[in-house]
Length: 101
Image (cartoon, rainbow, N blue to C red; front, side):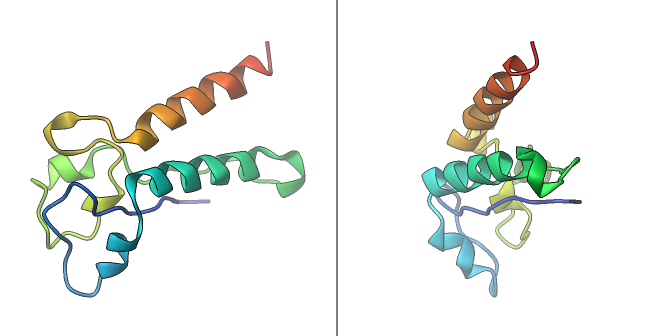
């Protein structure tokens, strides 16, 4: 899987026209949907061997521009504050790695 993720406009100054669906996801839903996807993909029966979560800090790189549709996918928010999804992915990864030790 090349990229996956959920946009959330919560805590941002808006989104570009045509991308208003990002307003429908709260930061908690962004977190929950991402972890659910990780759990689904880690099931050996689903045969997903590699996936890229989009994205770590595109918002900061784009200056939090409201006309950039990649910004709401960032898992690091304005002022470099971790969005809830950041901690959830970190915690999920630690738990997943522990299953192999």
